[in-house]
Length: 481
Ligand code: FAD
Image (cartoon, rainbow, N blue to C red):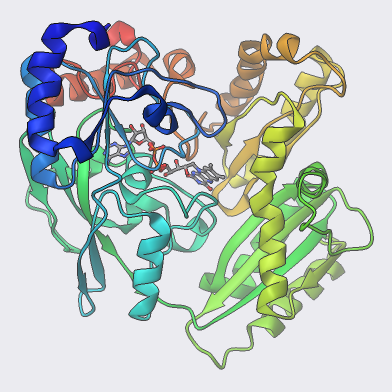
């Protein structure tokens, strides 16, 4: 228990306060609460202090104090992660370092199409700054008003535009990182080509704060689309959705920026918990696609292109119905349906969350096999699937049977995981496509990754963080450390 420990107060908290001042240090339990609780209330941590440095130099000095006193650290950004990676354990054994005060845009280089930002910049702020210079920062996800770029990079966040722009990794050109011993690595290079040795930044992208603390990033900007067209299309099955995806790609090419697969139950639940959500179609269908096109050319008749692809899909029986948004407001209303699914899902009852990816050709098999296997083992369990069709990434989150006891369903988590993840692995997929390992999947990664892969990961961890001070108990199973 660090909190009651006088040596901790004297050797750790005192020196940290000298570095960050009283503004940068929280030790009051109620003030720390927002840093302790995960978005889904799934984890609640307990620490003696949350440290909020204002600069890279301050953060590095804090890490040096932690290294000298062997104090474990949990790096935290916007705390919107879904796997407990940013949550400390609940035994007062760690401190949280939050990047919330490190939120400056350091530089915008129009000719180089880059923006350099502090790690604590909120994603929506970066999107807006890019827009103001007629550029796009394309990482886009439901939590964009709260999540920070350091967290996005550390989780290699995906989101709704990966099919066109790639995930966060594709946007990162350079990083500044504080290492576990408190040294600062300045790799803020805005280069498209750099073969001078190992591409070290890649190590920290998706490392969930276990190898270093990202303090700044140089990010690639893309041309800002001048026009978009959005539609909600109905389809009979994931199989017909995949068939239409192939057609849409051939007809629309790079203009296809989003294609989200949504099971009917997801729309029901989004509507149930939010009066502002309305189903735009009169008839109910089993599956839907939320589709967006974008183009740089303001003259391009995108709506017509979308209608054409829609019409061809109807002729081929890949699609059953649909609506193309006739205004920006109507397009926003269609997106609201998709954005409200996670919140509706959270409120509906016990659910089992899987963030899996499989080859696009295996999506339909995955959903069918997983539902069949779960239905046999747990009668009444309700299918609940949505996701990023073009990335093969399905959020497969079955709900407890209607009226069942919550505690009984919660006790089935590991059995449900085993059934779903076995199918994913059989289909050559991944047990986490975009949310990462954190605490949630640490046993699963131990079960499914090969020993050689886990050993390589542990070797990297030991090389960069030999005292295991950065986010211990996350990503790397404890038996390796
Ligand atoms: P946090 O939650 O604070 O931290 C996440 C991890 O990164 C932790 O392991 C933490 O220790 C580490 N970390 C944070 N900052 C740093 C840093 N500076 N240096 C080193 N390590 C750090 N995710 C997707 O990929 N796609 C989606 O579509 C998506 N949709 C979402 C929708 C909703 C409604 C919500 C609540 C979440 C969604 N997420 C999604 C998950 C989440 O928003 C992302 O994982 C996001 O990238 C996390 O950013 P954050 O700043 O909140 O990080």
